[in-house]
Structure formats: structure tokens, C-alpha cells
Length: 412
Image (cartoon, rainbow, N blue to C red; front, side):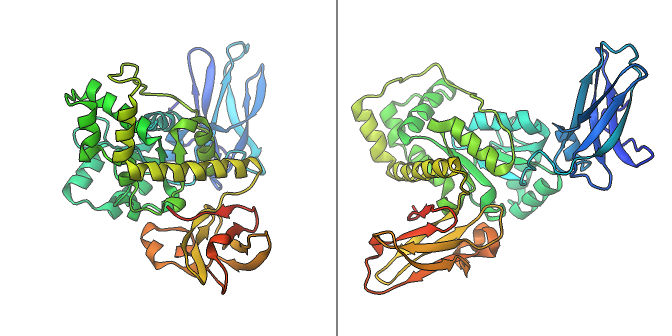
């Protein structure tokens, strides 16, 4: 029997079956007229039979377009069956797919020394290496060759994105700046992880000493322009509050839980590439102060992202749905900004709340935001809002998402 193929039966069901020498029967099954469905199968011989749901993940099947999300595999140990000559057939279709379908290509900006390798390894383990495109520079054996060729020759990012989509890649990962690739990947599909800047800088320095033969002092490294504010530079100029996922290294497990809920995966929180040999383990107060001074933008951005992370965790623990958005501007007479849902196309209903908790106005975030068009946000950029008022201090007013009570804070 073949490793991967279509074996139609009388009902034109798609079934591929393998039988290993140790008595394990495995394969995948789907309906030809509905490749998104999960099916119930029967494995039967003259001595035994068993029914099961074919819902194990088969990235190879998804990659060839034979099932829309790849959750169609099965396996059964028949080593103790008297008769091991089996047949497999589809009995029916589940009323509802029990596994969330991944939401499309995710571009992961791998900021150095932030647990990005752990995230990458989890992605590869889950969907398979063939569905993860990697960009770690032309000198890296890890990089996907055709990506390096594309970006070296003509830097045709629309063509790069089209090929990633056509070949059904689930992830595009690398030590790359978000721009200009973020001009072709919708911002809700951009993901990254940030780390406390002092920890990130120190870890990056230790990495350079151990693996790249860096000979300068830690002070030389910190003062080097190339190593200042790495995290904010790699994400600029994206609107931070609209990025689909920003995890926190210091709260990695909860971050992976958020990613899984948002994109329909079931990643394990792996821990890879941990450097146990460090040139500096505990920095002095002077070194810490120097790191903070040289990475002021990263310090501010991390505090902002960490605040969003904590607010999101609290909201989702209360079964609330996170709204992506922020207050962009406050003046004497108005508060404006943008707000949208990740998957849902409906406009977000917002309320303007006074200092004593009273609702003063209610509007929908449906105005066009031309400045955001380049980042491909939801609703074709019709996600803006503008509250107008008189004789009020805008700093005493709060913008609230009506359905959840989530407060939209000022954009970084």
C-alpha cells in the first residue's frame, strides 16, 4: 500500500492505508466532496473490528490539498488480532469538525534570544518541516533556499507571499525585520515574542561570545549601535496593537496558550536553544543601567506589550474576546483610534466612558484609516473611530469595547 495517495471506494471516499510490520495500521481518510470534514472510519477483519474518528494531524495530506487542514489521520494497533487482513471504510461524517482549522500563513518575526527557537521547533514538530519556510540569511543552512534566491535577486515580496500561499506553507519564520514582508502579509497574521530588554541584551551578548567568537567587552557590545533597541527596530513601523500575536518570554507558557487559541493550533511549550555556558551570569548594577540607557525604546515597548499581554490574559480567562486596537490621539475635543476583531468581520462597538463610569457616547469603529492600508488590517482598513465632545478633559475619558468591557489604551 502507498504512503500517500487517493484510493477511492464505491462512495468515492478518499482513503490511504498503510500496515507496518509490527501490527500498526495507519493512514488517513476524507470525503472527496468535503475535504474539510472529519470522518468516522471502520477498520475491520474477519476476527475484529473497530470504529474511530480520523482526526490525527497529517501535514503531508494538507500540503497536497487532499484535506483542508490535515486533521484526517488515524492509527490502530492490530497486533493482537487473530486475522490481520483488514479493510477500511468511511462510515460517516462528523456533524462538526472538532479541531480548529489553522487560520493561514503566519509570519513569525524571530527576535534573537526571546524563545523564538522554541517557537520554531514547536511549529516544525506540529506541522512538519516541509510546511515551515525559514529565512535566517544567505549564509545559514537553515534558510529555505528558494526564499534566499527570491530575496537576493529581486526582492519580490508579493511573489514570495504568493508562493508561500500556493505551496500551502503554514509558517514563514526567520531573523528578519517585519518590513517589508509585513506589507504583503496581513498584520493579523504577523507574530513574534518579546523579552525583557536587559535579559535579551545579556543573552544575546553571551550568544555572541560563545558561538560567534565576540572579543569585545560587554560594555562595548551594549554601546554598539548594531545591538541597540533590536526588538523595536525589528518590529518598526508596525502599529503594535494590531499585530496578531506578541508573546512574552517571561510568561512563555501562557503566551503559547494565547497563540494556540488565536490561530487554531495545539503547540507544546518547548524550550530549545538554552545557553548554559555564559560569559556573564549576573550583571553589575552599572551594566544593567547601561543596558537600560542604550535600549530606552525597547524598554518602553516591552512595558507596553507586557501590559497588553496581561490585559488579554485576564480578559480571555473571563471568556472575553480580545479586541485589537488602540487610542491613537487625544485632543481637547476628540479621542480617535482604531479597533477590530481578528477573525470576525463585524465592526467593533465602542463606548466613551466618563470618570464616574457613565457611558457618554456609543459608536462603531467603521471609519476608513488610510495610513493603515499598507498593513492589510481587517475590514479593508475601515476600523477607525472618532469620539467628539466639548468642555471635557480627554485624559479623564476611557474608550471601552461594549461587548467585553476591554479598555483600549493609548498606542505606543
